[in-house]
Length: 189
Image 1: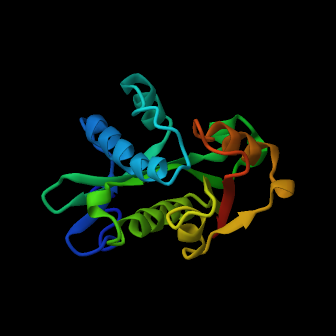
Image 2: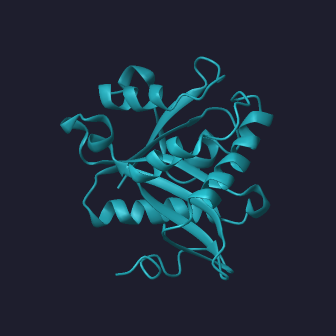
C-alpha cells in the first residue's frame, strides 16, 4: 500500500494522513518550531530556536514519519515514530512503538489532526504486531498529558519505568524544562 493511501479516511475533513515524502524537511522543521512555541509560551521549554537542519534530518531518518496534509498537499503536522528497541539499542524494549515527536501547525490546531496522526501511528504499530505505543510528554498541560489520556494513553509511574523508557524520557527532556515536568505514557494495543 503506498504512503498516500495507507491511512485513507483517518484524517478530519479537508486533510489526509500519509507517510513523509522527499523534500519535506524544511516544512516539517517549520511545523515543529511553530508547535514548540506553544510549549515555550506555556513555560515548559526554553526558547532555544529551531533544531539545526542537520540534527532535524538525522531525527527524521531515525523514524517513520507520518504527515498530515491539506487536500492541496501542504503539510500541516507530523508524527515521528520507531521501534523502541531500535531507538535505545535495548532488545528487551521490542514491541513498543515509540512516538518521538508529534507536531501540528498551530494554525491548524484543534481540528483533530493530532488525534488523526496518533491513530495512524497506532494502526501502523498494530500492523507490525507491537504490543504498545509509548511517548514522553509535558505533564499538566492541555496539549500534553491530558491530550493523550483522552486518547487511551496511561501514565507510567517513574518507579515503573524500564531502563529503555527512562532512557527515552531523559533523552527527550527539552532544554529548560523543569524537573519532574516530563512524563511517560503508554497505550496498550
